Amino acid sequence: MALLMALNAFGIDAILPALDAVALDLGAQGNDRQFVVGAYLLAAGFGTLIPGAFADRFGRRPVLFTALAAYIVLSAACALATSFEMLVALRALHGFFAAGIIALPPAIIRDRVGGDKMARMMSLIFVIFLLVPAVAPSIGQGVLLLLGDWRWIFVTMAVFGSLMSVWVYAVSYTHLTLPTNRE
Image 1 (cartoon, one colour):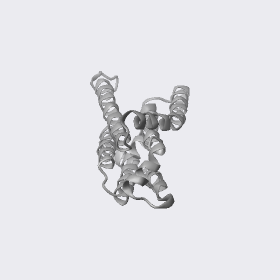
Image 2 (cartoon, one colour; image 1 turned 180 degrees about the horizontal axis):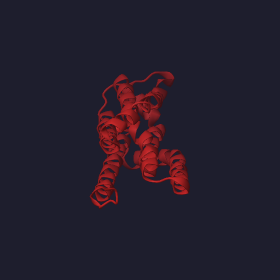
Image 3 (cartoon, rainbow, N blue to C red; image 1 turned 135 degrees about the vertical axis):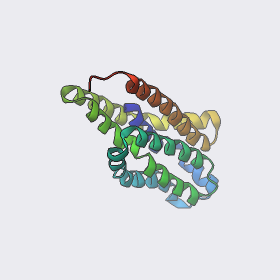
Image 4 (spheres, helix red, strand yellow; image 1 turned 90 degrees about the horizontal axis):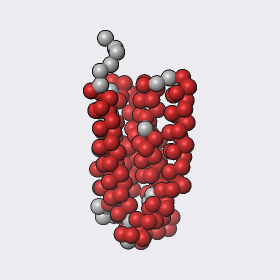
């Protein structure tokens, strides 16, 4: 759950070292390059209002996997953006649909555990979530140094999203196939 929430923080902060390269490559004027981050944050803020209602109606798992799929697809789409306006629009969609990966983990934990155990788990999740913004720009800079193009940062986001999807699927499949005492 902590790494799911960290995935969203990574989506925000990994691109920071590449903002100048994005602006140069796509022809953004002045400080317009900031919209790459601002559009994601603003849309994610509005997006967090949606997944809870859908998760209550359709279940946590399908909504979480939809959010992960959107994160992966829109990360890849951002890597293929051909104009600055297109990138900003894709980042807004990216933030909006990826909001589920930040809104659902606390709900999943509240569904599964309670009391002190829930408090400890939530504390751990938020510590990891708060550490990622400090590390993500360094990872983004490393991607720039190794691969040389800002588009690879979005590819890295898609790869991390794919790895998290596989892990969440494996863990949730294991928990769903175990017998329960609820009869």
